[in-house]
Length: 155
Image 1 (cartoon, helix red, strand yellow):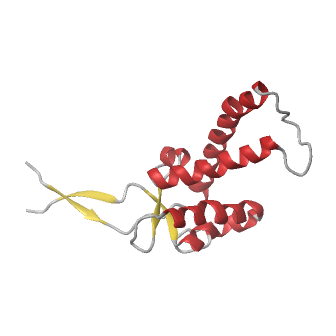
Image 2 (image 1 turned 90 degrees about the vertical axis):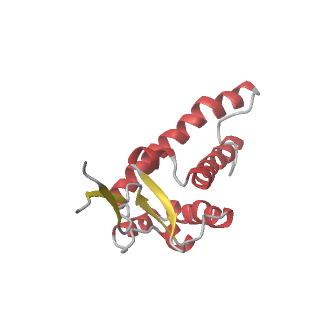
Image 3 (image 1 turned 30 degrees about the horizontal axis):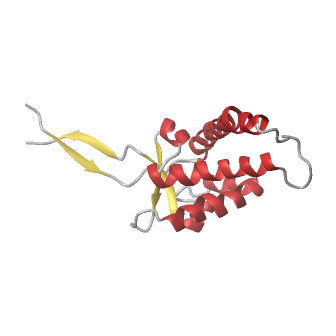
């Protein structure tokens, strides 16, 4: 009978393209939620989906769904559905659990800045821990979930 030991190694940080595909899948999820739930509710109560000024009610609710999705999924699962599919996870770099403040700052304020100035998201490709601007602000990073390697134990 061969025994195995588990060797722990440094986290494998997720690069730009893995995070990009996970984000696209998350956007599909958010657009689906808005299309299957929010739009029918607005149509059912007779609220116009057309932009009637600087802000529309539908635009505000869609924005709330966008940020709530990222904040709640990251708080409760440390990953969104896109990250789950691609085997990625958000981790704190300071050895403390992810707090509500950290997550709201990362997913709310940081993601808003990254989404507003999209070229800033490209810094993921150039930082040593593959951090986006929102990761740097919140002292977090995204890693591949599989961090352990199983090797045969030597007798």
